Image 1 (cartoon, one colour):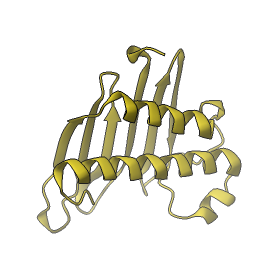
Image 2 (cartoon, one colour; image 1 turned 90 degrees about the vertical axis):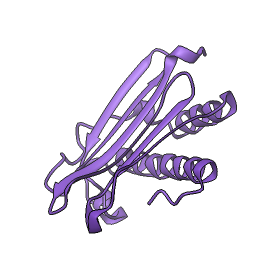
Image 3 (cartoon, helix red, strand yellow; image 1 turned 30 degrees about the vertical axis):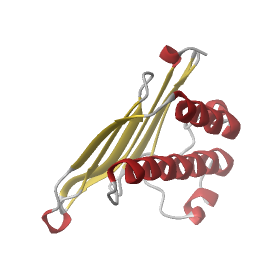
Image 4 (cartoon, one colour; image 1 turned 90 degrees about the horizontal axis):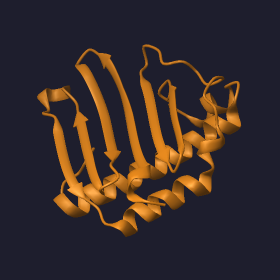
Length: 147
């Protein structure tokens, strides 16, 4: 697998009392990790960070994505984005390109009550893993708390 055939982007956000609040990150084929966290609560400023990760990190990211088999899923039965918010996950892996969109998920009960609990569960746990990885990388590199 070459460098140019891998990309991951995740977004979760909503518009509410404090404006457009969101968390977004992406891994680019050249190893650039871009991170943004915008919250206007208590007049917080947007946090934007960029860091390059090495091939080992990208390889682990590919392994995590491949292992969970998210590329086999389809979001057509998942809850639509609503006033609660939206989540987006885009992955390019080799010659496969997927893009998922759903509402913000507050609990596992919401997953169980959905029309596709198995697929949504795969999405939910992958997102948790990706966020943990990104928060760890940002915290280690910049010594900040990303949340």
